[in-house]
Length: 182
Image 1 (cartoon, rainbow, N blue to C red):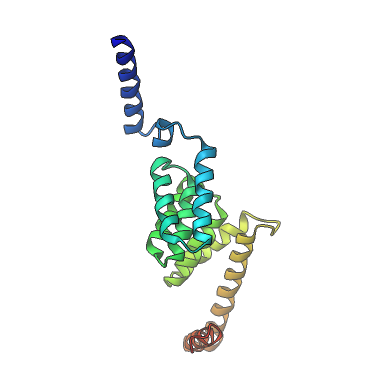
Image 2 (image 1 turned 90 degrees about the horizontal axis):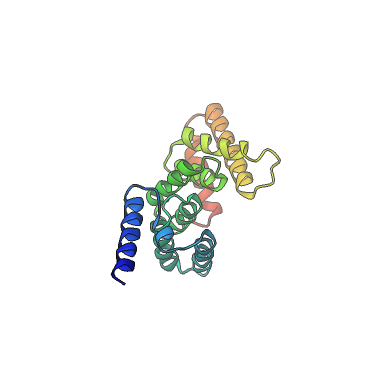
């Protein structure tokens, strides 16, 4: 029986070394499959859909800790942060997602929107263009959202070039009126 404990201890040491060297995740150590992780992420999505953003955030942050190289989880977490108006955290999450999956259309679209809100038009356009480029058939709703945003930015730039920077105040005023924030 002491030898079985020795083998178990050796296995635990091996798992800890893999964790510390980034060769394994907590999900691996806990024997959680990708399907388990994705099922839990769907629960987080249901929380978010029901307006339980704090619960969604806590669950997704836990899942990210379990599987820190899963771009889908970072994109989901970024979406929750956006809903909570935590744009810096959202952008950080989208950028991590893009580090692991540079072809994540959702992360590109939302990173572009946040960049645009922050006034970084060039960076926003780059993200929108990448999202559009990844969906040449125009079937992905997030790429289509990026197309619409890119068209809007292009239209605004043309208006500013034609009428001068004061047109931005008019556009902002009209946007607030349309949103009911007169």
